[in-house]
Length: 361
Ligand SMILES: *Cc1c(COP(=O)(O)O)cnc(C)c1O
Image 1 (cartoon, helix red, strand yellow):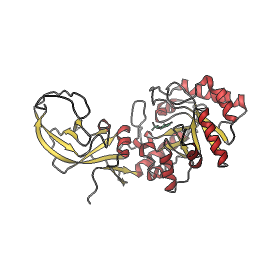
Image 2 (tube, helix red, strand yellow):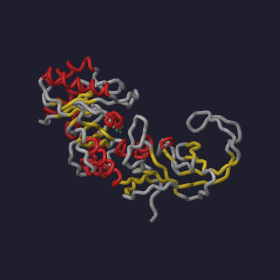
Image 3 (tube, rainbow, N blue to C red):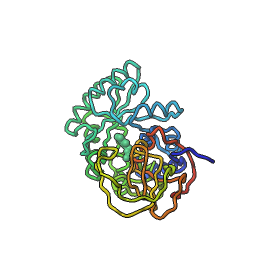
């Protein structure tokens, strides 16, 4: 069988198993999962694998991805992760729940929800230290009061997001603070907050080690399901598949060459002035893949290959002592950045497999 190159091989059964193992693990402490599909651009078959594995909601940062999944017939509730603004009308039309941090945006959502005779559900995100999205805790009470006054908007919960911008680790302290905010808001406004969404794949260690998860009853997982790891130190989670996505590209040149460029050195393709170490003549290969397809540092070749560099359409590897020929297929695992960029490239074909084995090269 001649398969298209470059391609990303996606094992749906491994994704489903990861989702199942994680759903069962988190459920043991009463925590449900949102499956996050943004790294795969809302690829419907990946979303279906997550749902078959037990996630209760699908969350994505882009409305376009959510519409894509709905058009593919997925009818589970959808959550929009990135706080919206100009797309308010379409969000009310297409999304059940959105995350919010601005009254101006909530007013727009309220306006369109009224127009469409709908009730739009919102989770208010609270700033817990990572300094990406979130209402400052000191402003939260006033924010909730204002939101409660908006017609056709229902606050169904609060949440927070850590370890994305500031690298702040979810721990007992910040998670407890979130729970305390829940209690005080419920008391102050006589409301019931249904969903307390405590974080993302970075919450794994906290979750495993904490006896008491407090009011947290939901976590939004992308990377853990897709790549099988937690994201504070990128350790593999026992029992999960870490190779559900593999990139395959073809060798378009294989030659012995000097390790030191010859001639006068100026700028490279991206305006940097490169420097090199002379390691003599060595065996190098070029694969038909470049920065336009993947962040090259997001590729994980097995230790038979070493990344030397890349330009828009070429990745250059030291093939060490391996005999790799013109036309051979090179396989790499992907980290999150690699997955995100590869899935976004229009040049990389998606190929769904269910095979469980990983063999490099
Ligand atoms: C991307 C994202 C997630 C999922 O993050 P992972 O690290 O992939 O689990 C969760 N919440 C929000 C708000 C996000 O933007």
